[in-house]
Every structure is written in structure tokens, then in C-alpha cells.
Image 1 (cartoon, rainbow, N blue to C red):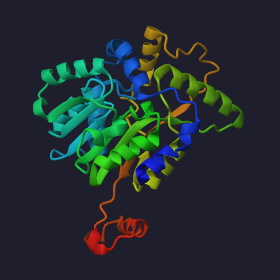
Image 2 (image 1 turned 90 degrees about the horizontal axis):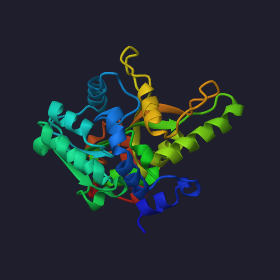
Image 3 (image 1 turned 135 degrees about the vertical axis):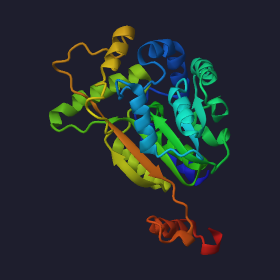
Length: 301
């Protein structure tokens, strides 16, 4: 068993009650895809701007998308973001989903845009990216409120590592468990998280566990921050309420006693290049540590 498999097979998430898996996520979106499209449109993200193009422009800037990049959209929905990014920047994207319903809608979406050869959609589990795509070939793997559908966040990060070029980046924008300010609120937060996870086939991540798993894999945490949308452009999550009213999924009946159980963050992870000739790079010490761990000499890098 290689070191990647040893690492994610020992993940602490294995002992938790998990309500998601690729099969469960597939079933969820095959069943509810039309309801999502009716409420969310082409961009299935809850934390958003009223004019969704401003959210996507923000993500272009935040990810630093460049025309010559190759990216993987991990959990692409119907390729609303992917086609927008390709049309606006010219970036080449392989988009993946486990839902046949989303695949069908995504192909139609791609055909209706100018993205053409730039966006290709694949029926593929993002925990197994190297089974579909060549290793060390991508500049970016991004998760736009899809990371939470992972049954094993550590495995998802390891999968991204394998297909990223040295110097490549993982970008995650998603929900993370809120830390209770008052101890007596923790049980209610835990209850709400359990409700969301069960209803949406989700596995809301613990930020500190994700950071630990990423660093254990060798990633450098290059940025962690709140999502800095302008307040006058923020949609304020009312669209999530509309979806709950339409479907009855995870509906909140008592707002007076409700404690919001999550925080939204952006997380950027960098896969070091391990090139000693780039010793002036800010990740130089990571190169030296890599040599120690893997018992490599300079000429082997």
C-alpha cells in the first residue's frame, strides 16, 4: 500500500457517521437536479451574489485563473462556472460529476456557450482523478461547494495532489463547521450539521482536520480567508431557503431558536515544486523537508 493510501485510509473521518458517498451523491442529484436548476440556475452555490456573474468574476480573481492553465472542476454541477471561466478567461477545464442527470445538462450547457473545446465534462468520482486523468498535468483543481460531498476529505485532497503539476493549486470554497462561542451551543450546532449532512448527502468539513490532512500530504497552506463579497452584492442565503421551501429538504421551522452551524471559507493549497534551483522561492524549506522524508538527493529532484 503506497503512502497516499496509508494516509487517507487512517483518516479520522472513517469513525464518524457519514451520510455521503459517490453513489448517494449521484442518486441525490439525479433526483433533485431539476429542483436545483429551478432555484439556483446554472450555478449551484448557496453563498453567492444576487447577480451571479459577480460571484464568478470574484472566483476568477481569487483563483488567479490564467488562459494557459488546465484545471479540473471537481463536482461541476451542470458546468455553469466552468463554461463561464472558459468563455471569459480561455482556461481549459475537465469537469467531473457523478450524476448522469448533470452530465446531460452540462453537455447541453457547453453546446450553448462559446467554451467549445475548452470544457469537457466527465462522469467521474473526484476521489479517483488519476484513474481518468494523467498525473502531474493540471495547474488547478477547484471545489466550489462540492468538497463537502466528499465522504473522505483527505482522500479527495490526495486525489487532487496526484493530478496537479508541481506548483499547482487546490482551491476550495465551501461550508466548514462553526466553532461554538458558548459551550452550550455546541450540541445544537452538531444537531444542525447532522441534519444538513443527512438531507444533502453532505459531510461538512472540520476546518482544522482539513488543514491537518492537507499539510500531512505535503501541501502548503497559501491562503485561508472568508469570502469577501461586497455586502451590497451578497445574496444573503435566501436562495437556500427557497430551495428548502420547494423541496422540504432540511427545512428550518423555528428561526428564533436556530443557530447557524457553519462558516464559509476559501482555502488555497499549493503543491510545492521541489526544485532546488528555485531556492529563493518562499517554499524553499519545504523542498528540503521533502528530500529528508523521501531520502532524495539534489540530483534526484
